[in-house]
Length: 462
Image 1 (cartoon, rainbow, N blue to C red):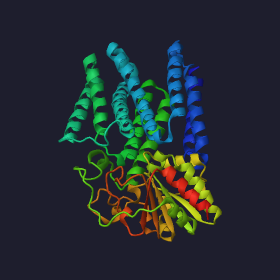
Image 2 (cartoon, rainbow, N blue to C red; image 1 turned 90 degrees about the vertical axis):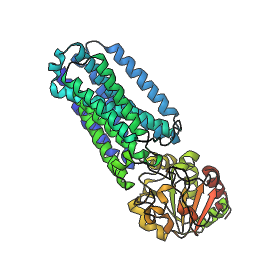
Image 3 (spheres, rainbow, N blue to C red; image 1 turned 60 degrees about the horizontal axis):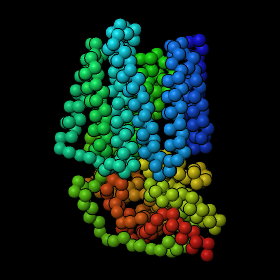
Image 4 (tube, rainbow, N blue to C red; image 1 turned 90 degrees about the horizontal axis):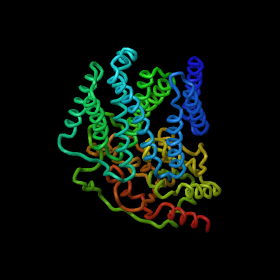
């Protein structure tokens, strides 16, 4: 029976990898998610037949029912604006589960030292390291969720914070070495896990809002790595392969996100990102020029080329459906309309793509930064709805700005710019946007969905 289970694990691992591959393109992403989900379901069922289960079916089925039920209900009810925090907390649960597995195994070793020889020295070291990484991913993801959900301030800094963090992780590693090389007592285990959890929270506390996509990806990589390590401890091929794939994908995505912001990962983790600590706005020459939604709609209706740049504000206003309705009207009038997506637009990677797909926007109308940036200078109108930092021209012109060097969408190069914004505040990073003060930029204030609705009404009158 063990051989059959391992064979099923291998088949599900291959299916999981193929599903992940299909997630790399919008047209196949949905089926890729289904493939990966089915693979995990089959692997879970196969685990019930593993010889080492020893009749613990009631507890396993109860855990699956509770966890699956909570996840299903939560996913059904979550708003698209809350998707980033849901991803963060679900990712944290994976790291927490890996840490819990490690805790159980380490407690078993503490109670019966002979099991250390059964596991092997390498497996024991991997178990301790997996426990450390899993705890960091869990508590860090909880903090990320709290920030994204508005339950905690965007960043929390105090004097010598990094030295405190270094001391916490150093002591945690010391206790980990003690656990891996001796027979640990309850106190040692408790202190180790407490320090690991504390470090994860402290690691995420100073992270500003603009860096949140990067840190979520990083914790995702941590979770995969922790699961893979605990797979070695349990000699479970499915956990090893799935964890390795998730960890690798998360690491690659973290690198891509950091590159998209022109930020080193060390800067994300150890330096504050955003406006001045005092909270004062950057000095900007000129003033914002407001316009009416109807005027903006007419301007786009008579344009030859329009580029739309969506951001988190569109998600908050749930304006994606109205945007697509307006785009349909514009294309009927012969206007060439395209969507420009920055890699870190929104609160998580791919956030804007998901929103536009939900509204029915065809994939061939959605372009990444590298694909469309050269087209802005040919655009008659660029409509920015809810985006801020990803179109801020100071990233190209002001070496003193925290955004300097970050690749941005060249909205400022278009002939006219319309910006739909609820108010006059700065972006999530706290950096004032100089795009709003350019001579060819007009601000359209108000709720995104309502403003676009008025634009639609003005286009229909033409």
